[in-house]
Image 1 (cartoon, rainbow, N blue to C red):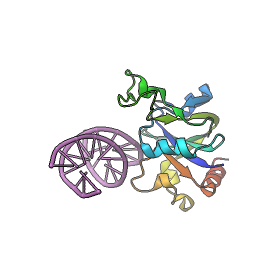
Image 2: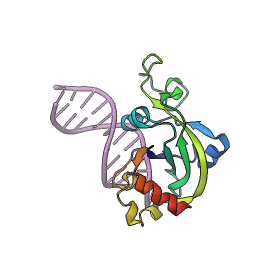
Image 3: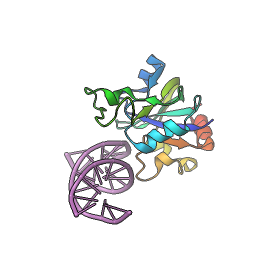
Image 4: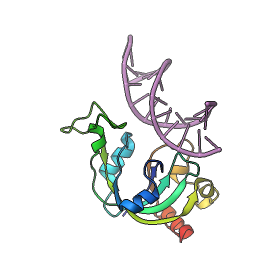
Amino acid sequence: MAYWLMKSEPDDVSIDDLAARHTVGWYGVRNYQARNMMRDTQQIGDGVLFYHSSCAEPGIAGIAEVASHAYPDPTQFDPQSKYYDAKSTPENPRWMQVDVRFVRKTRLLSLAQMRQYPELAQMQVLQKGSRLSITPVSAEHWAFIQGLLA
DNA sequence: GCCAACGTTGGC
DNA sequence: GCCAACGTTGGC
């Protein structure tokens, strides 16, 4: 059992969208490190901090869980998609996704609030220059955040 | 819109 | 394999 923080732009998929759809495919990851974590490390049932990024109030907006193993991201084959990748083929897909299932919406734990807790200072997502859309979360950080959101 | 940080590309 | 140029992320 592992824990993750996964960033989504709420204009694209917000926590309310996830609540309405229950399960969404985590399409659009185009970074090899993030892809490799989905493909090689994530397991069904892993805990997910659902994070809103690139928006007015970035922060953790809810809890979710990994709901599938990795499989090819269909948007890479769609010429109409902004995530289209001409160098990827169905025979040899370059980009993968997992399904993520809604668990619950929480109050927004904003990025600014997260930075105020010394207990969270070592979180990967809070490190200077951290841009990865998927980052591992330690059991200690997970438990602390669960406490804040209880 | 700015810009720091980091990833990717491609010439050599 | 190096590294400069370019592109992207994402907070502010």
